[in-house]
Length: 150
Image 1 (cartoon, one colour):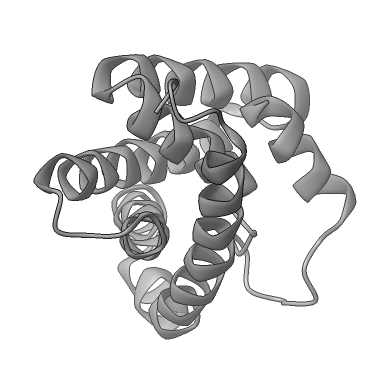
Image 2 (spheres, rainbow, N blue to C red; image 1 turned 180 degrees about the vertical axis):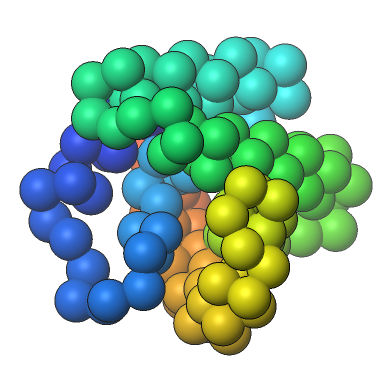
């Protein structure tokens, strides 16, 4: 499902000119996995999504950005879910911001600190808004599961 969500994002791009801005629908799958399966299975799902989507749709450099964002996002969302202090939507917003932060760290390390800093404000806003939307999708999906699964 995470891979399918990533593919949908490729064919329905957002009207934004900043590289790296995506809805992050795959994060909904990771967040649902965190809620239902725990941190380790969610990590494996995220890694499988990054690797397979790189093989199918991207290149090695894009994999570095995706992996940096995915790992930081997974870690932040896993901590948020485990703490019990955050709703699914709030965990998703944190994950969206963390994903873009991880990507910016990779951009700064591999390309240019200046490029990362110039894109940071737009990616912070995008991470917040897209994380909000993805969190709502995850919350709706989780409500659709039978209570005995949750």
